[in-house]
Length: 327
Image (cartoon, rainbow, N blue to C red; front, top):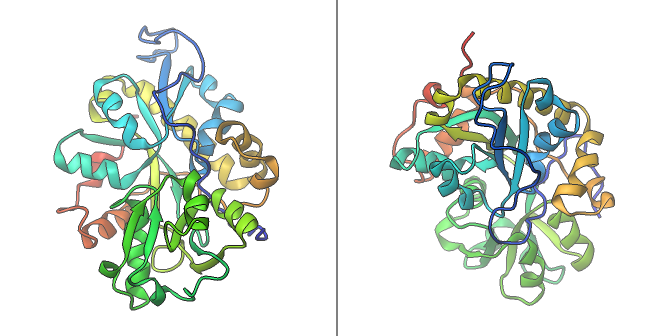
């Protein structure tokens, strides 16, 4: 297994597919309490990924309670699964929401996006392209004409990998992306159903350990190092109707992000529980950056990448998308 790095990053295990499952009980939180919040309980659809660790740190450290909030977690397999629920108001926030899906939905008018907090930004080796140890593929150039497994086609993985391939004089149009859920990628590689897998932690370390798989492309390398990939999002309608609740959630999240960024141990403590991985794996996986602010300059990087990659037609006004708490 690879040694851990100082800057760690990882996206972790996906839970079983299915309907949203309530993570903790409680009332609907629609009535205002003595703290002046419009809602006492906020429902968060969360992926069991390491880039959403701050949410669980915030719950464990009672940062939301300190703001007068109760957080109700509903696990999901993909953030796209929760999009209809967010639009209908069945959930209030999506944690670890990949920006590609939600910027696209915003552009199409499916929803008016509001970003309450950032979740994760790319770090080197947090998601890599792996091949079997005896594979003839030795470099990025060798991926032309090959099948590469990704979790969701035409999304954050192919977007960032295409940028890396172009930087290495590889034609992305000659690569065939095959949809394979993260937990199944190791088996797909072993059975030669694909030539390579673009995989994230903890599956990355797990596949390397079990199959002796080799890294042929650093998926968090230049020119995408530091690109923000996910956040905590809601709708502008929810934020405008619940400004105090949204501000309270944002304050707690930014504190939790800071805790995740400053102390890896805090991440390691919560990940095994909600991501269903072994503590030993959590101790060595590469973590993403956990931004402790909502920075439009940083977010502009993913927007620019999406426009250049053909996943957005126009650049949105980030100043209207990023939630700004009123003084």
